[in-house]
Image 1: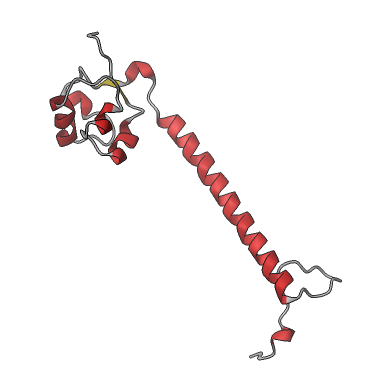
Image 2 (image 1 turned 60 degrees about the vertical axis):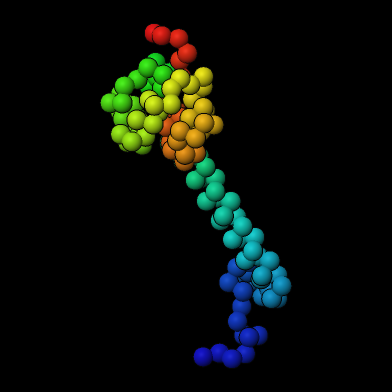
Length: 125
């Protein structure tokens, strides 16, 4: 086991034929490397989530109307239980789908899950 730290070389940033880096240079290289990894991970995650939300969003023609749908129709929306559907029906009418959160009908978390699947039409269809 080594006890002399001067014998330990920085694993990052040195190539064959280059001199060993001092501790400060090694630490800076490690930080840059880790920052680059985090940036790459964030970019991959963001692009994956964007692709997933675009792929799962319902087209406007097949969205469930909050003002006219039955409890059973509302339950077809991913994330809505019978209890949530009952609350949505009970507190009608809605001018916009954001009224669900504004009036305390559903939580922000649930609204973010269902907002791409619902719409609030004001007139009868």
